Length: 379
Image (tube, rainbow, N blue to C red; front, side, top):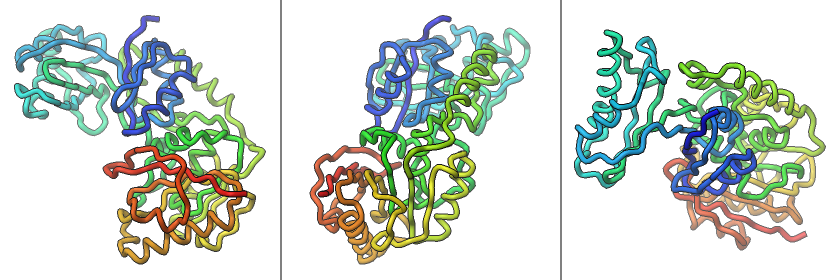
């Protein structure tokens, strides 16, 4: 198979997790970059990346890397690509453009429009008809990045962000992104073989992602991808990868994974999500206050994302402080000898844990600048 250059995008701060995953998959020439990592590989490697990457949100193949100085240059460079290799006139496309430090291209919408025109004009000239634009679920999603005078054009293998595994029954308020949760677990160094709990689990993202990791369940097994409908789709290779992933899944673990939350509605969503993710038998969820919850096992590891002012039900300062005090009580009284990792988007609240962090990793949870804090709890 021919090798190509790919860029794997992720949330800020999770780049080391993505690099580690790509290296574990055996990808070649892995290089950490801002907002992700690049690698060299075949189409099969790109399929594997979509199927197995947990901390990433996109897998993109580089189609064009050129110098452009105005809209005409951009149009001409994209028009030189043989688009029959990637798209039929009956299929849909969409171009998402991002511009950085390029004064000649001040409007991303216009830049995306010129790129689209270059593609469909070629189709119309060759076939007398052209692809339509579908901004929601295009057959061929394209990502255009213009930085100064450098144009890079990618085709997006994932389409819908990879964090959407397919196990969420509903959209919950201020959820922890699945890819972010998995990336944080990878950054924490959890061995995927020790009891893990989340005493403020909300809709259960940490616990479910931990179960997917520990059971060797490929996070892409429950969804479809745009590349399955592409002109150059290699169906036998994809089916082989799916069969291999299904065969690797474990149905039992030798340790417990558990979560608790005081909101019964959140726990209901967590239980349903776990069943849809096919890890329902590997986890347990409980309606309980963090300060008084006794986990079903002695925790060796704690991973949690307590509220820090962004959740609608916790907009009162006193309530937030009480919440963090409760978490501190849980850590002090229920977790002797454990490693605890806490995601914080509000530095002022961490003092209520009555603990000193030994590691602080800067990350983003959506638009919020956070710290992934490590606490070593005394035996």
